[in-house]
Image (cartoon, rainbow, N blue to C red; front, side, top):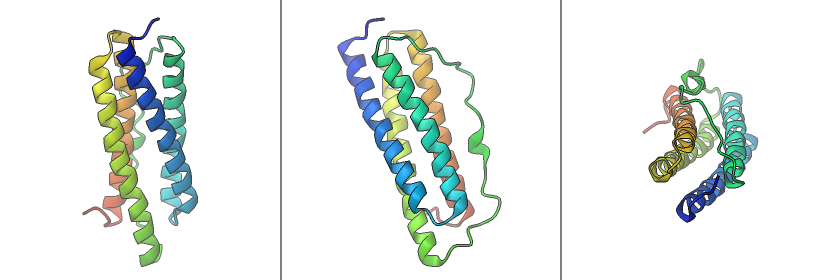
Length: 152
C-alpha cells in the first residue's frame, strides 16, 4: 500500500499525538490520588498504546483493518463511589482529568480530519474506529469528573 504525502503527514501527526497521550496518561496515573482515576488513566494508556501500534503499522505500508462496529463500551464505566480524597488531592486529580479531556477532544478532531483525507475505505474505517475509542476515553473522563462534582 502506498500512502500519499498528505496521508503520511497526518499519520505522523497522529503518531506524535498518541505518544503524547501515552506519556501523559502514564504520568497522570502515577500522580493521581484516587485509585479509580489511576485505573482510568492506566486503561486509557493501554488503548493509546494499541492506537500507536496501529498507526505505526499503517505508516510501514500495511493496510490495517479494524471493525467499524462500536468499540467496547468501557466508557460506560461510571464512577460507582465518589472520591474519598482530600479537597487538595481532588483539585490535583481534577486538573489532570480536565487536561486529559481537553487532549482527547483535540486528538479526536485530528482523527476526524484524517478520516476525510484518506483514500482507502479500509483505513478510513480503521481511523474512524480509533476516533470512536478516543471519544469513549473522553466519556470516561467526563463521567469521572461529573461523578465527583468536578465538571464545570
